[in-house]
Image 1 (cartoon, rainbow, N blue to C red):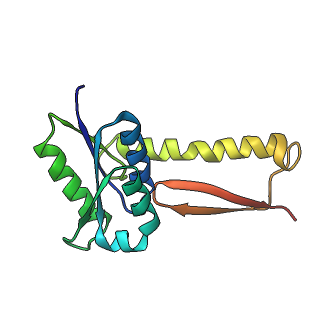
Image 2 (cartoon, rainbow, N blue to C red):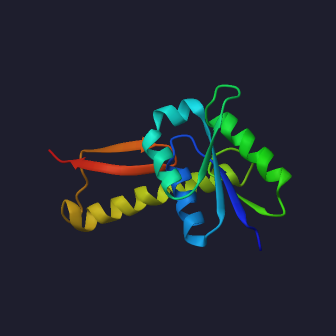
Length: 147
């Protein structure tokens, strides 16, 4: 599409790091908008983005969090649409976006159940509890508990 830059928004920073990684791999300019409150909480992810050559633009308006970073990313994109991709992460918008997020995020649950039934605990057995770490756009299964 001959676009030379990419913009994104991030709250916890995982999406920003992923976008920065893709931009570095493709050799294109990357700007990630992040509320300054979130930046202070997520300094390691800000550092990772910067190491990858991304400009992290702190957003000082409103609550200085993801909501305001989305606004700034959209402003940038609509004024530079001919040269810029918007790598959208937030789960906002109209159909089909919320159902897509729901369905895609459910994949890890289905895959985890299948793996546990087949290998992890024993054929046909599921754990009594699953403890998960949830944050930003990422969900990781931490460990399984079997009594």
